Image: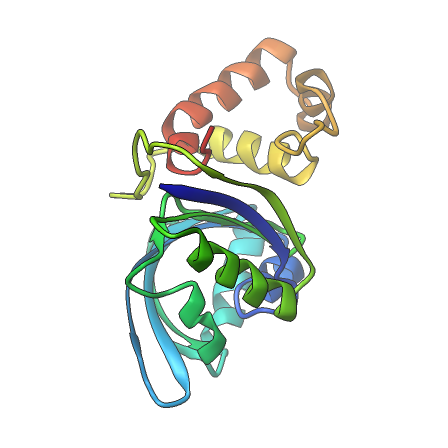
Length: 214
């Protein structure tokens, strides 16, 4: 199967513009979709990460979006229905398989992992993204899929684990090459190295299998 990992500047998109404005991070996985005359209707589920005041501002702002159809939160876990532009058909169709939740970070950047049996379908998806956004293709290659990560329920992170994960994402710990170290993140959190490291590793054990594809 052909697979691709792609990032794009979603700071002008429905979700990305609001993660940027409110400084939160979102993991989201599409559940289903259908086509209307002028839109692709997407049902998705996910998890919201960030400071409590920022999460509340994000939710309030999102509720005002014209393309929002439905939204339900249970803690940090959410189910959402949104209207996407028709060009999103190249991303949401019967040939494309989403391998893991997308990450939409607090800078409005979105990272997706998708797959298809035909490379030309991925090429078309990438072409669509490149026309609409500033896009980076990490890879497009043929390989056998080991698993597909789907958010079944909200990962049960403690407040300290959520805070550690949010600080790590915010400061580029998961970028390549890494922009910071655990020692530096611990200083930002005003806790010891061992304490921060423990919180971050426990959060990763619960959350990262839903996102990172090796």
